[in-house]
Length: 295
Image (cartoon, one colour):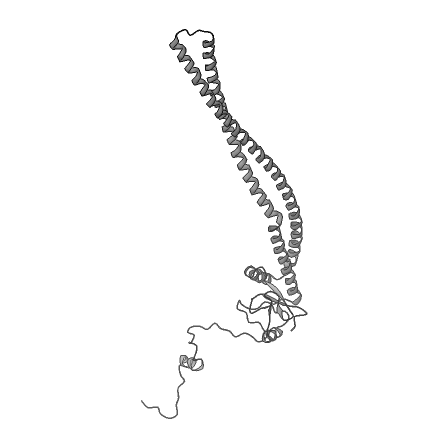
C-alpha cells in the first residue's frame, strides 16, 4: 500500500544501532553498562576506593615492610651456611654408610679368619699326632708306615694351603680395619665441621628472625590503621604481582613496574581528587601520589 502524506516511521532499534555503530553487533537483553563519571578513575574491578593521602602513604610503608620481610625470608633461605650444612650433612651421611659397610666387611673377615684358624689348627693337631706315632715307632708294618708318611705329606701341603689362605684373610682384614678407622675419623671430623657451620647458621638465623619479628610488629600496627577494603585490595594485588601491591608514582614513573607514564595518563591522574585510590592501567598496582610525582 503506498504511503500517504508526509508520514514517516522510526527504524527499529536494531537498525538504529547498526546505523550508528556499523562495526559492532547490537547488545540484546538488559544493558548493564554505566559510563564512568568525570573526574573518577576507570576501574575494571569495581567502584573506586577513597582514602586520604596520609593513609595512602601509610600503605607504602606497609608495602616497604612487606618487601623487607620477603627479603629477610629470602636471605634466611639462601644463607651460604644453609647450603653448606646440607652439603656437609650429605657427605657425613655418605661416610657413615661407607663406615657401616667397612665395619660389616671387618666382621665378616673376622669370622672368616676364625674359621681359617680353626682349619689350620685341626690339620696341625692331626699332623702332630701322626708325627708322634711315626717318631715313636708305633707303626711296624711297611705298608702302614708308607700310608702314614703319605698322610703326613698331604697334611703338610694342606697346612701350607690353609696358612696361605689364612694370611690372605689377615691382610684383607687389616686393610678393612684401616679403612673403617679412616672412615670413622673422617666422619667424626666432618661431624665437628657440621656442628660449627650449624652454630654459625643458627646465629645468623636468630639475627634475621629478630629483625623480621620487629618488622612484623610494625607492619601489623600500620596495617591496622588502613581501611579494610584498601588493605584487602592491596593484599589481592600483591599476591599476583610478585609481592608488590602498591607503588609510588615518582617522577612520572610507576615504581612498581618502572614504566614511565605518558602525558595522557598523567593528565588523567591529575584530574582525580587526592583521596581517590588510583591504579596503574598497565600493571594494575595501586599507584600512590607523592610530592615528587611529577604531576
